[in-house]
Length: 183
Ligand code: 5GP
Ligand code: MG
Image (tube, rainbow, N blue to C red; front, top):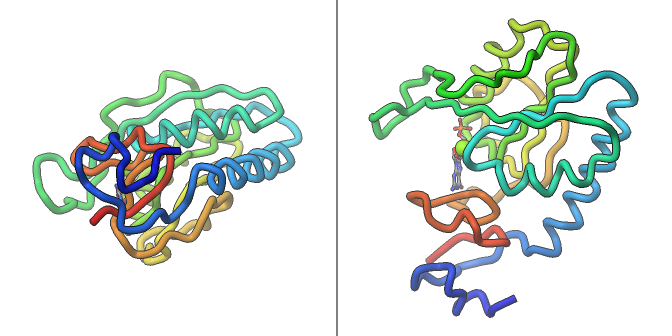
């Protein structure tokens, strides 16, 4: 890997701290894949990624799940044009796949307030899935609004603003292969 401070992906910014390296993430994603494989011995599994942040994690994760599955994505908007969350989640893109009777695994990049996930769980729960669980790469553990355990979790996240491995700052840095905080 390029020395992080000189990483040309960072638009001239420098890394304050690499929170999770590529190798650390890859190791944990393999473990999560094995956990998920073991947790679903039967039934139809639909892995539902929350765009855009989950796309890198999801792509790596599904390749470590050694059982049949399908993939779809959700786009939820909770902010609209406002700078602060309105607290109300709208589905901008709704999966065409039927959820009824399936194991739904909702994949999120990072849980912060948990507001988005909490509202999605309520919305998706109404469609009679066989089960509904969360897999998040990162969790800040200040989630007061999520009344549901994150069954599959990559890492506890430091309370810093993180970028990379799908996480952006103003749409930049999603392709950075590690998770870092910037100066
Ligand atoms: P919540 O609904 O849990 O408050 O919001 C979670 C969403 O906020 C994540 O999906 C992500 O888009 C964004 N978010 C929260 N913390 C961070 C962070 O440290 N870095 C980045 N890039 N996004 C974050
Ligand atoms: Mg997000």
